[in-house]
Image (tube, rainbow, N blue to C red; front, top):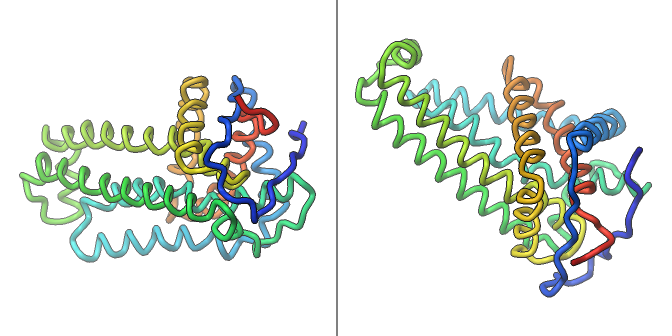
Length: 273
């Protein structure tokens, strides 16, 4: 059953710095499944309008792969591909807007994709996007430092030698261990700070601090469900990258729409407290 539509604040409404924190609901795993089904439904409804937009992300991934392999930066290929997922919530903002408009029975063409950046919360959304960009750069820096301290000491001559040493040396296994742990930390930070903050900023004109605080509260009240959601997102994105990132053209919008619907279950949009 689709969640009922709610009144949407007028775009001209100024940012509500004193707005009371929304009420956070307790959700279940059934809500996660429901959100994914609704995301798929939205994708089937709107896929034709946004196909040109969503293929840009896979193309970007291919360009990253070509540059890193061609310029001898192959140790950064996986960190860059994984790190670009940290920027996914910025891209998802447009899908939140389309899902919201469809939920309310309004026109939801791709022309509305960038509406949130032009609305009352545009500056707040941009600021949160800058935070994710900084987080992405920090991740790349940490990943490179881990490589230099582990497998980099063996100076692999190319991608083939890199892969061989990665799985046959203690330095390679250290890289896998510490790299995955660092990646988990960065992914967790991104998840708990954005799972509600971005859709909340799209939904109503609140300030950035309140949006992030609400996201942290939602994660704190639903730690298991949010962790499962993060795992689902990670697995789907990983599968979408095989082969040649083509699956991202489907997985990205589905997850974007589904994240909006998950927000509508996590946050009581009619109450504050």
